[in-house]
Amino acid sequence: MDNKYKQQEIHSFLDQNKKKGGKKNDQYCYGQLKFGDVQNKIRKISLKTFFGNPEFEIFCIRFDFEDQLIAAGCSDGTVKIFNIATGKLAFNLQGSSEGSTPTTSIRWRNDCANKVKSVVINVNSDGSIMFWQAQTGKQLHRLIEKNNQILCMDLRYDGEVFATSGKDYSNL
Image 1 (spheres, rainbow, N blue to C red):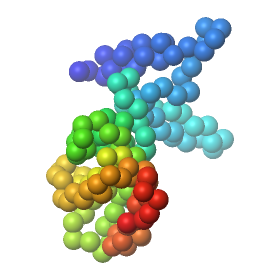
Image 2 (tube, one colour):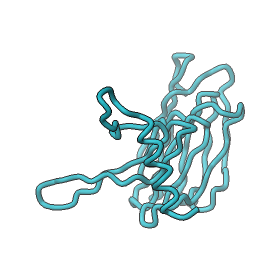
Image 3 (cartoon, rainbow, N blue to C red):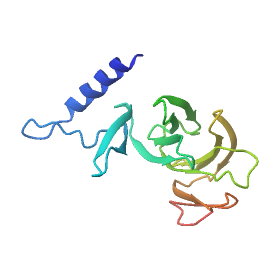
Image 4 (tube, rainbow, N blue to C red):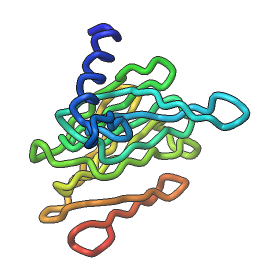
């Protein structure tokens, strides 16, 4: 699909979300990933659309430590990894065990003390915790907290310890 077609699809989706009075509401639309870029000294920020799909929402996003990749956690349970320089989808990571449960949090592991580089960790509301090698799209590990909806996670700076929190009101 060429870029012109993508832009037309994004604009037609934006046109469907109008405020009262006929003004276009392009502040936020489901399934859009935009990021700002400082253009000049007066700090004017422009938004560039990387990704647009009205079929699902983006729940969380996270830049990697080198600012080369951005991961988007989606309502369909996928994590989409984009190359920032090219603006293209590098990998579509599908790992949710129950189909379309949302990816609720994403973290990149710091590469400084680890043998495996470019590791992204995501949690889903089905209780799954997944570790991926972002440069290959390969799933490295998967843990499941049964009967829990994991809503957030964080990772210690050295990447050795992580914590999750969810519906069961406890931390892992």
